[in-house]
Image (cartoon, rainbow, N blue to C red; front, top):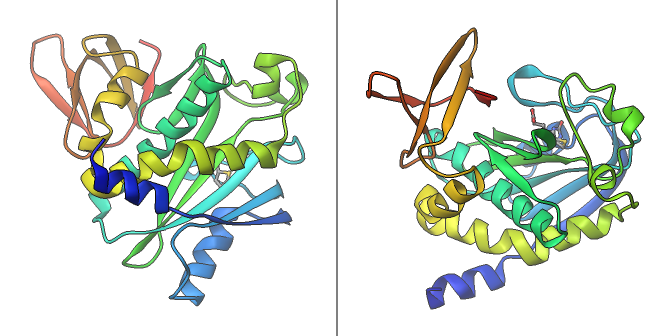
Amino acid sequence: MHDQLKQEHMSLQFQVQWFDEVDSTNTRLLEQARLDTALPSGTVWAARTQTEGRGRMDRKWVSSSSGNLLFSLYHRTTAGLFRLPSLTMAMSIAIDEMLHHFNIYSNLKWPNDIQVNGRKIAGLLAERAGDDGVVLGVGLNVNMTADKIAQIDQPATSLRNETGVEWDVAETLQILLTKHLPLWLARWDANGFSGLRERWIEGCGGLHTPVAVRDGVNRIQGTLAGFGENGELLLRLPDGMVQTIWAGDVVTP
Ligand code: BTN
């Protein structure tokens, strides 16, 4: 690894604050970033319970008191709006890598889900905070039990569901922030999506695999041709043309 990048990632620090209950850690931290223009990059707000957790595309993120990891990170960056989606990809890779260290064989699902055997274990929500910051929210299902999982409107799982044991939620966050996130965040800061491309492709199952993308009402099918410089998905259509997909969800082909 390049020496300078090594030093930068060693020096990345996070300041973690825990709350018993908030409406949404993203909403709270966005508000804090607005009120405090000197909010340090690396501020992390985590909650034991969220009453109004938010997901992408105005969906709800339900986790009530299931012992899941719910947190938001404030990261200072002047990267333009089009570059932000790839920041969530850096966080996804860090989580994927941590799960692999726990012997849970997760994979990445574009643009920002992490799955285990087709079931969602984590989701991410990035929101612009002023001109020079972003709030990156993470929901990782840690101790959610099978009965709670069954109430979710899509296939889901949790660390506990995969391993049969209870996990320490705060320790899981600490491991992510100390062992896995610094390197991928430093790579993103230095090179944007180019610093992630190889690992992302490996984590999402490789090039030329069949992929279907749902973009609102449309469902487009093809094979994975690659990713553009900001992490946009390049889909090879049956006629050989490559279509660039900026937003949507990869679904089972
Ligand atoms: C998704 O998959 O749609 C994204 C889910 C993001 C949920 C997390 S939980 C912590 C943070 N606070 C929120 O309100 N949302 C994010």
